[in-house]
Image (spheres, one colour):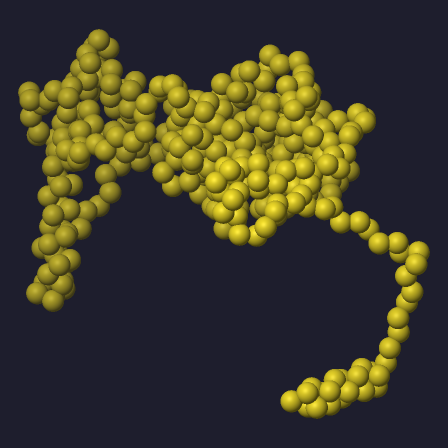
Length: 375
């Protein structure tokens, strides 16, 4: 088994003999459709005829240019300093010795061949620039818990991907929100920038919650499995707890609103991840140090003894404190008095009352009779 494992890492020897299966197959020109030899109704299929004629003219021009360059390179193959030869062999990766020039292109002149013929032609379309500003002035992002990107399911398009360690995410941004995409994710982070655009970052198919329970270790070390590329191998997946404690980078997907400034958000996120590597305290510890004196008993430290407020402002203030003397004289509801706090009645003095449906009907009939006598 060890020998088979070592065999997986032996590099294959690539030679020209292995690449050249049969002489003449490399860059072989495929047969073309000739209109004069095709039998069909030209008038009925005029649209097809026009498309075929246009494609034929375009293909003939491109073929002439290509074989002119091949002919030029073959003639000057011994001159490696030639710009066209270097770009054709090194830049494009062609092997001119294996390219056979068809008979109809053997007599093409090469005196007008120039290096720019091999370059890609620029498009005349107007370039519409998107958000490309690298200026991060007055740009800020924060975690958001009341708004999020609307996603139908996990197949929603992503704007980018990150490879980040889950432990660093937890260390930088704290405990994740509950996943809303089912078993493909175990947690997510929702952000909002100062443009009020929302972003969502979530892990994608990285735990046994999606892949199922792992098998025995021998199942993943078979020679057949080890010969596969790493991304196609069957491997054991971590549990949800082990995943969020992991320090190895894993895949995270990012979704955003339609017009969100994604490039600036990516730069901000990378800067936060670089900062996370230098932090010694967790997110919870940093937040507790900053806001321990400002938060109340509901969200404070559970070990601290809290003081419950029993004196409400409604029982200490009244509307007269916000009125002038003239307004008090014109106040139509008489003297202003403070609200009296309600007192809880004594439950020990209460008694249980039971009744039946017949008694309720009897009382209802008596009440109707009393109303009729009053009329």
